[in-house]
Image (cartoon, rainbow, N blue to C red):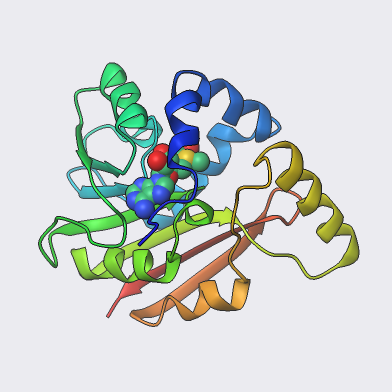
Amino acid sequence: MNTTKSHDLFRYLAPIYDTVARIASFGRYDSMRRSLVAQAGIMSGDRVLDLATGTGYLSEILDGCEIVGADISLHMVNQARKKTDASFVLSDAHALPFASNSFDAAVCSFALHEISDPKVAISEMFRVVKPGGTVAVMDVVLQSTPIKKVLLFAYHLFIEMLTANYMHPDDLADSFKHAKGVTSNAKMAGLVAQVSGVKK
Ligand SMILES: C[S@@+](CC[C@H](N)C(=O)[O-])C[C@H]1O[C@@H](n2cnc3c(N)ncnc32)[C@H](O)[C@@H]1O
């Protein structure tokens, strides 16, 4: 199974990822990720999974929590390890090497478009979170209006270099079937969906 469509890209992107991602976010790199953390309701002392952690930004901002960053790219994980002493685990989002019900929350930012089967990845996030824990994801998603389709195409061409595979918002909502309460927001010119749900 091809588990990540652009694994090789991250080999070269890893050293400059933080700079590129900040430019691509139009100055909203920090605020969007902090918004996801706020929506996840993470509290001090929580054990939190940051799926597809990349260079480990969340482990830098979540003081007082036990953060486990999981990612398939050794190059991205090595960058993360330079920044913090949080735990980073090389793993595939489709089959996480963690026990069921072992995290208080699981988050995933700007990575579902990289993962071959994002629905499976979200199911895995629900599996490893305890009942009552929160799963929260944010990513660029498919758009329905002409203006947003054009914006998405520009983003896809110039930022993702035509490698991304965006979810349809309905599919994203469907993947929260394990949740009892679901909250969703649209951000960043409407290209980004942020969805969270509490595990039943
Ligand atoms: C665009 S980066 C996002 C990093 C970070 N979450 C952020 O908000 O900046 C996408 C990350 O997803 C990871 N990734 C792609 N496919 C994956 C998979 N199947 N399992 C785990 N991580 C994966 C990549 O290695 C990369 O680090």
